[in-house]
Length: 413
Image 1: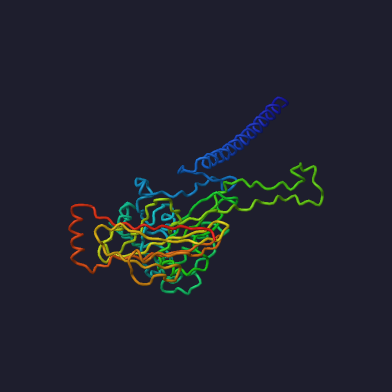
Image 2: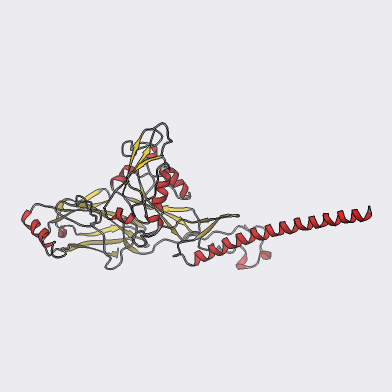
């Protein structure tokens, strides 16, 4: 009996040892996984141009952060083909759109069908077509979704409380997508990840003011830029203790909570940017005619009676009040009858179509940390058939070009 008891005890000890070893191995595996996430995250922060950046969103999970793909430069990427959305939700369409940097024109139609939930995609005109073909105007994507009443059409019902732009500061990207999912309209959204002291994933600001009517955004074909924190900046708070001394030297009355470093100003300069918030540089090529209409669906080219609008923003990021001038010059060797209007905000400065040299404006005051938004409306007035026909005939043999230059200069007051 004694020998048998020893064997049983020995088996029990071995079984206990095996369980301890198993637990240790599980702990090691978990630690290795977490360490792997941390290493990948660090690598991603060091090289922000890499496509795959990993972010730790919780203590035991690694999640890939969305990185936008430019389908003109990387047209073979799998994201650069139109997916099959049938049976999925409008939110899936929006997520795909926000995963590419290119702005694609999509028309969303609605139908009633009690057999499906609101937002379900029932039909789409094209599947598998390249985004590059969409951008060149060779084809158009039309999405048909179900709306039995819970989704709001902000073109038809602009006074609905869902039809003004919310304030997303301090919220998450999912909050933006949930809001978009409640309206039928396709609003162009771009997410830009920036260095910030704020927690990663927190929305810092947005390009359009909260309360702006969605109908106005749609009418102006605006793209809303949402700036999201990458959380890369160290929070180098001021030491709360005496002259940077150790914690042992603190007095009982001192607050042990560090004071967070304030957010640095985004810009300390005067600059001009386009509707995508991209800064102009010297000799920047401006895509003024990118949205040309009535031109056989070929974007970026002009013809008699084609027209469009170009938006640009004058920004004073300095601590000084400034005054600035805007001048326009053109290169028009073939005498195209190009005419323009100019609007500052919602007010026309030039409300009739005029020649480029009648657009110049001087001594516009702009206070510190403010900006002015301009809309340059252009049109090729096709009232000279002889000249227009001659230009069209010459275009068969050589490239016919027209260029407009916009120069903005400022000085302190």
